[in-house]
Length: 387
Image (cartoon, rainbow, N blue to C red; front, side):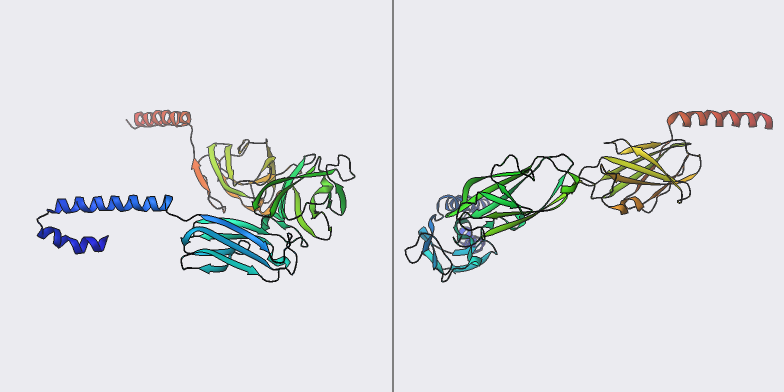
């Protein structure tokens, strides 16, 4: 468009067009180009006609050692077309010439070839197909699904979902911490129950199964690693292991901001902020000391993020630190209680060695008014004595 503007402007000027007419012409040309581009994006893109997986040798189930061919067809000739393996985003075959189909063959399939494959056209449209070998273990839907951490409390119900990609049905039981748990069993020694539901397949020939595992009540002895093994229907040796870590709720992060406000004389107000907590902070504990050696403790009720410390000596430096506790009165990170801030009663407030400390001094208006009156009276008395 820029080239057209540069080359055609002298021609328009010779023909007697004004600069305004030339500008209007180019504006209309730009609008027309935008409309045509939009129509091309909406209606001109070739559609993926099919993306299929064929097992060579007249077999219906893909098995180890068999050849598996992936065929992608489009409605019109287009480019680029590529077949990509989703697990590692590796492009297996690509054509930059306009064509209506592309193929890729796995000559001797092995378990590492299992997974989801995509046909991508024009870097926009995609369609997926699954290759899960019948004599290979099932796959997790996502790698992050294999390991997870759950924060639970005593007597709380544990409920988590495992996502499995499989060609066959799952077995009628799964193994949790070396104990065989029958499906939908209501009374087992470990109190674990589970069931699964088949979701809509994420790709052709692959079944997406959600395994919902539940434990009705958790005790302190249950905290730690839980190993869940899911097997296929016909071969329990073909299994997939999940590792779940059960941890008691508790504060894993420290305070990000601690504020000291001088309320006057023996009264100091502490307030604080924390980051998003992965567990439950049941209580905050305020520690204060006059010499940084002997510490006194003040328990703050649950849910409060401020404490009013009274009964302190006036005009005295105090050290303050705040600790977050869980129900077992344990801190998720003991270094949280090592950061201190220094405050001086009755006017001066000094910043300590904690990051992001904000310090403010506050004198009530009544004190200021009384002080002004006393100052005025004293000044008048002195003035009369001088006279």
